[in-house]
Amino acid sequence: MKLFRVAELMANGALSTGNPLKWIDYLRFGWFDPLMKLGALTTLQKEDIWYTEPRDLPENIVAELEPLWNREVERARRAGVAPSLFRAAANYMAWHWLTGSFLRCTADMMDFVRPIIMQQILLVMEGNADQAWGWVTQDNVWMLGVLMFCSAMTWTFNNVHFNYRMLVKSFRLRAGMIGLLYKKSLTLSPGAKAMYTSGKITNLMANDADKMT
Image 1 (cartoon, rainbow, N blue to C red):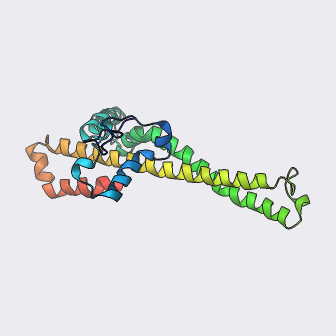
Image 2: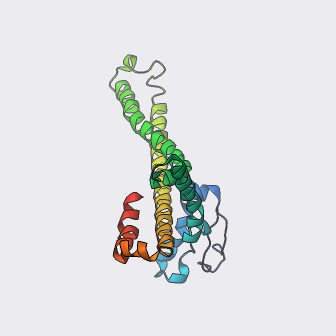
Image 3: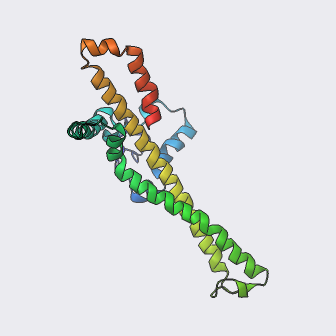
């Protein structure tokens, strides 16, 4: 994964254009740190902001989403039913929904585990170690504290990455839908243009596309 920058943000060249990310920077969102540091030192200018990644450009998103929509239109034509925009969007979002669901479920499991671990710690501290898990004693109860810390860190990591992935993908889907609507509006026949006013098309782009994502 690479970030494409307009110019070097620091004189030492550490943030030169196309500088590749290390995996740890991706996991902890370290790619955002240099921009935050620069913003703390001076007012950010337009040339300080990164270029949009090629995969996030509207024309590339439309090129990826349009074949899925055309496939859905063809499927609906053969089946004699109305095409489903939701089905096309689901095909576009399938992998991110799958990975997002895994992150969300794991985060929820950690949220459920923490109170159970805390209950075991309290039982040992109150002198009721015999009611706790069989391997838990006053000598190794610290292991439960470590386990609770790990579960909290796992919850935070998974929850943040879930929100980030879903937000980015929803923006991409919105940009793709707006691009498809705009592309379709350019090919409307005079009769169709009489049925769909420019205000209605604008409303579809501004509001309905946002509600869909």
